[in-house]
Length: 338
Image 1 (cartoon, rainbow, N blue to C red):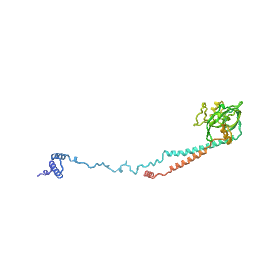
Image 2: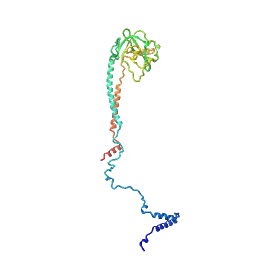
Image 3: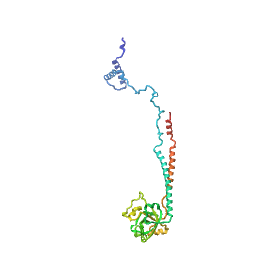
Image 4: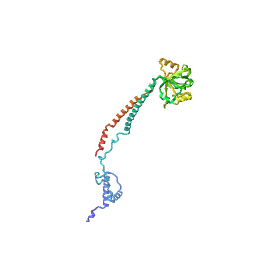
């Protein structure tokens, strides 16, 4: 018999598969499709090409033809490690500010040293003028020359013009509120009218009718300090002459309102405790003592600024010399590998 007759045909192979399926269905009690349908499906399946029946179970990527280490563009983790900590910038703008503070404080402390020397010389000059005997005030005073006679004791005679009196304030004295009484002094003959700061009165004696003993009508002699015009600071409100309210002694403004020269004299006196109480109860102005009352706090400022400079310098040194943390040190060593 020829050899090709023993080879199974597609029809016979499908019939054998159908018989096997029917036998398995009878054994398991399961129902399957009809033989005709199954035979058609198997027949159609068997007619497909063998290459279409192959299904890959896994998907694998195409591997390179050579190892990565042989690639010239390959970079190892040892050559370029990941950055865990920014070790190159340990300090930011805060360190610059911390470095500026001690320099600025030192300069301010040096400036206060110069201010201390200037203020000490100024006070010594004024105290030298106070201890000298009083000078008679000339009939006409040159306002430009007052600077050379600041805190100089002078003496003047004349009559007070109480109708042009001005109250400057409020001013405090021993915890009580009051005002400074400024009255023009009319000097007879060729003498000019000058402004005299007679002293302090309490608030309850603001009206002249409540203090008749403080209004002398005859000629008086005034001894006091010749002072430069005051300068208003930024926190003091402006005077309101139309309402007779003066918050600071604007000498030029007061002189224009009263027809006087812009000359300011502060009456001096040194009453004892009983005399001061009696004058306060009667509403008589209490003048100031003949002394230099300029503030000189520059020594405190020197200590403050230099102390701040030393403290911030120590802080700056501690911040700069602070050792890095363990992880920062490890990352820095890792970057330095070659």
